[in-house]
Length: 300
Image 1 (cartoon, rainbow, N blue to C red):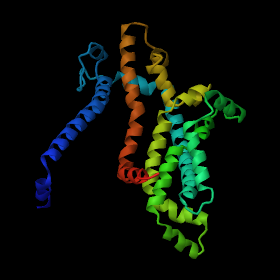
Image 2 (image 1 turned 180 degrees about the vertical axis):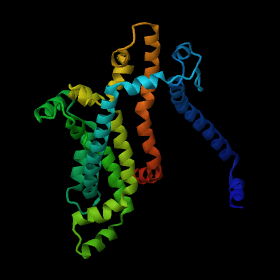
Image 3 (image 1 turned 135 degrees about the horizontal axis):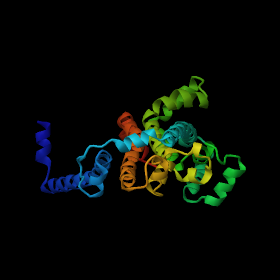
Image 4 (image 1 turned 30 degrees about the vertical axis):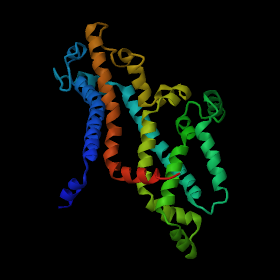
């Protein structure tokens, strides 16, 4: 009954608007899904058919040799280990600093609240540049260490502002007042009140920071020289951009046409292998994503 009355209230303009919206969303979804499905299909197909353009959304000439080559390569596993390590430790550092920065900025009685916000906002638009940052990392003794990828990006100001807005709009000031009357300190309020009520925004931040660390390669390219510290994306870059898959995974194959074909399949397989873990993270955070992101983006 309620749905029927809702349909009656829709005007002709509403129906046209919804139809156009659904069409545009459908086109956008197809534009996003097609390359993903094609890469999966190409990674499972015969490389000859892929290069000849005969593979579409369905695999042809089912072939798993590319995946065998990927999983047999020890550098891929080194990259996996390092990327997981950087993503877990880096995200933990990011979440801790972001929430600790957002909490005082969300309190209206914080005396330097406005001045701090101006300072942080300036850093969003202006930075020292690559060379000063490189010199700073080197002088701090972080060069060629995992901390060079974690500490320089320990906090993102935009994410901190989103978290601050979430705390302002979801935690009522009277809760703090009641806690203070009962003898609660600011630190106790942060751990006992703020963190338990901030699960949605923390889930959003975990997704943002984890994806950043997982996809990051530029900092590693600048600050790391030891290949045992390389993240997965740096090996992926060598394979896809610098076309070095023959050096990385084809040592036992002669330089002939079959080597070229297997190398093409390896490129698609590496994309899938490197993307699956971060794609598996989203379903666990999806139920918090909309609530945390929308509330955090309402103001500020």
